[in-house]
Length: 251
Ligand SMILES: Nc1ncnc2c1ncn2[C@@H]1O[C@H](COP(=O)(O)OP(=O)(O)OP(=O)(O)O)[C@@H](O)[C@H]1O
Image 1 (tube, rainbow, N blue to C red):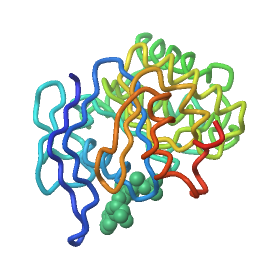
Image 2 (cartoon, rainbow, N blue to C red):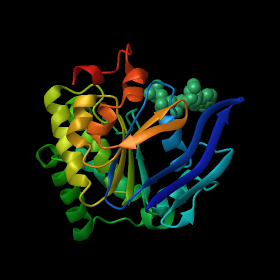
Image 3 (cartoon, rainbow, N blue to C red):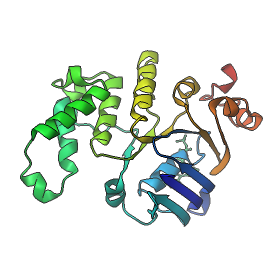
């Protein structure tokens, strides 16, 4: 397994946010995590990327313990996180945003003497191609459509060379067409990367869940299964019924 979590406990001011017995993700797996608000989904990703400290437990990545390591070290080990809040520079072009992502991966010394070699330019263009940004490379990032901005964010994470990408609600605020395209992009990226996606939109989950879906409720793992198993599980339906973000019952 690429990532393994065991007996992870996290609390904030005495309130348990996570009490997770086990969770693991394999190489080139696309895992979806669902759960009602406050289930601990973001906290789990925060722990994995080193943003939040755990009280106890074990998280190993490529066989190495990562609990207690800081965000920079964990990113260097190969875990990239795309947050919901935008992190692109709107006044720079798409190309310059991508170039900056390559530069910031370097240490200060090599950043000072940074040159765009043909290999770097190729890499930027190949990532842009995968995220279907090649047609808008010289457009200002701020002028992109909402969907394209999100794809640019994913491209920026990709350029940091992660083995595992953590993505929070990639389709939030997108049109139906953009959502479907995002699903296709994630499935394509999962051919070369492991990806954990937190998502609420069940139609989108149905499109991308080619492997397991993990259901978290009140910090615990309620169940794990295929999309159909999860969708038809009475406990899952009960957790979602009556919630505005649930569309389980309509599928
Ligand atoms: N920094 C924090 N300080 C205090 N409590 C927090 C903090 N972060 C999260 N929590 C609490 O931990 C619990 C889990 O929150 P978390 O954001 O991980 O849930 P979630 O499943 O991602 O929810 P949502 O779908 O609403 O984003 C909640 O009760 C939340 O209020």
